[in-house]
Length: 133
Image (cartoon, rainbow, N blue to C red; front, side, top):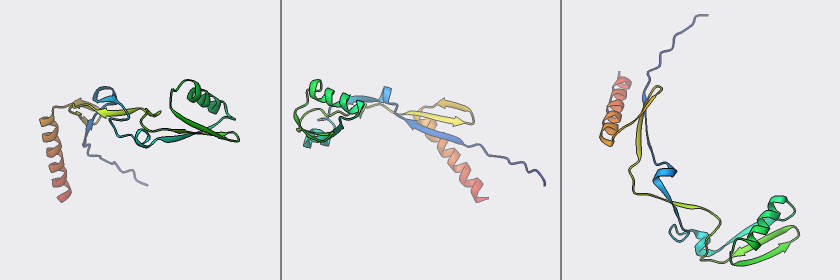
């Protein structure tokens, strides 16, 4: 058996990211046209479990949500009315440019838009030429 040496052509990796911590903000149900806000929703809770008991207690005593509950055995179905904040968290993007980065091997660097596009286009062009050989 002979050993073969495999040579890899390292290519650059390009990414554009919008991190939640810097490029997004909290939003209301109304701002994002949340279906729960617009149409109301149901939440089912199994009160035979510790989690279900805690959820039931929160909904009834702390949530301030308007609606009604119906119990069937250990399951309680809460029907919440429209036009109130749901239990989800919503976010909207801020008007910020994405963070552009180029990774070559183990080296990762942040790039300006023009440099990022030029570098990526050159890399694609080089790759196309290599494939065509």
